[in-house]
Image 1 (cartoon, helix red, strand yellow):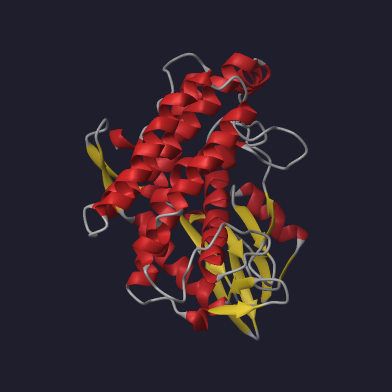
Image 2 (cartoon, one colour):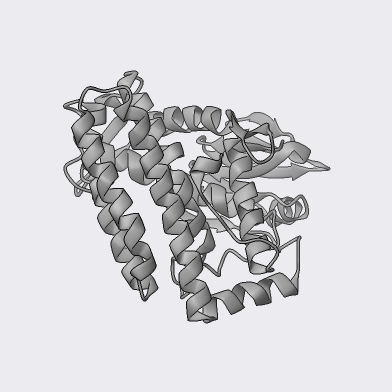
Amino acid sequence: MKKTFYIFQNGELRRKDNSLYLETEGQKKHLPVENTNDLYIFGEVDVTKKFLEFAAQKEIIIHYFNHYGYYVGSFYPREHLNAGHVILKQAEHYLDAHKRLDLARRFIEGSIQQMSRVLKYYRGRLEEKEIFNDVLDSLDREMMSLSEAQSVEQLMASEGHMREKYYSTFDTIIRHPDFVFEKRTKRPPHNRLNALISFGNTIVYTMCLSEIYKTYLDPRIGFLHSTNFRRFSLNLDVAEIFKPIIVDRLIFSLINKKMLAKKHFEKLTDGILLSEEGRKLFISELEKKMQTTVQHRHLGKSVSYRRLIRLELYKIQKHLLGEKQYEPYAAKW
């Protein structure tokens, strides 16, 4: 499987013959181009047109982040997998209100399944069973009511309400005075826990974008998240399913194992963000998790979390083509 490389140093990315290298203060670090899936650039890195042409030729996506770890944008090479029929079907499902609502509902159902899965995991390990039972009951009720939604906006409102219930259990799971949830805040996050959630979610959004590039799907046409003037939206849809088991579980693990501490954050004028050291630590552990394999019930074999994202996209593609109805339920993994 091709690898993801994260670059935190400042320097220059260059092409030499049929290889890529990062030059920093007179030192050169070669990147195995044939084994590179995507690059995440957090440092101040210069690139040349020659480098970008070669990256596009090798189908390498480059994600850029600013000094504070905020996502800036992606160098998304010209699609190497083109299928006009798939894009037409994707647009058709978006423009058809019934079909779009159906797909949007399925993404939220998948998200609820994953949130429930996380809560059941910790309910089995902590004493406060009632707290988890109450939230799980609420999620079940909300799940049953999704079929009554008449618009995507109503679905989004229900999803927001359910996620608020889900977040209410975080302090019980973590129980650490330096990582209190309080409430969900973004752009910028107002506390350390929210900083972790925002950073982790952003990385998963870009992972989903990279995986979409390996399919015939168009990342600009989403269903739960409106296709408007934002750059991409399908990756946001798919990420809803994976954020609980990838990001949230990793956050709980890093804090409960005391791998992350106050020293890994920095205070800004209007918020709190992960420091560079904190981002490096988070990324390192996230990559380990993405390479971890889980048993896939339908395939009868173990697959990595990264591969699960690709398989989810293949299911969406089959749904759009009318080959098989999309069922994003975590319980089937």
